Length: 187
Image (tube, rainbow, N blue to C red; front, side):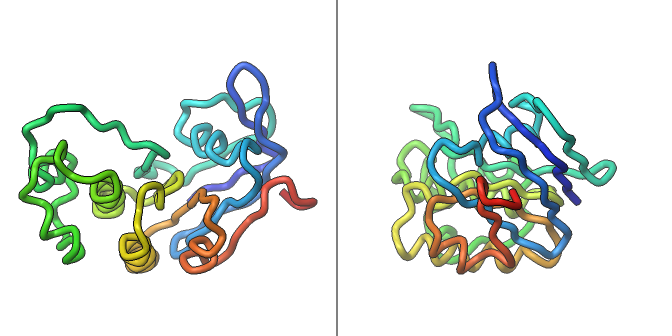
């Protein structure tokens, strides 16, 4: 579903190290490495919001992408419930996890940071994407929410190819079929 070959991404200048890897349907691949090495920048190059300075990025033809940014945009005062947001995003066809479902009637601007993060993660996983890109999906999540994230990413795995960036190595080990260490000898 996704292949990077000798890819180097950045903005005004290159940020990431050389990266070569692929992600197939049914895989959850983690990107690990030190802060600032360019993990998030590689994800952004895949969606076209960062530049590719070298190498190439190939996606399967007509692949629909689901993307969760590191800090999902949260509008300050939006009188929209979680259920309404999921419907607007086309992510309301699957039954959400119970801990999230009980919060869906609330306005999204009244959810805690972790509840909002979980809502946006669910919206990404329950959407139409075939290639799922998750940038720090455990930001703001407590231990219970992290376990829900692990469970839901695992449940979506057979139908999707998923690429996850996280600083939380225990999370990557729990959710990924393999982890790529950026900056290591083999990218």
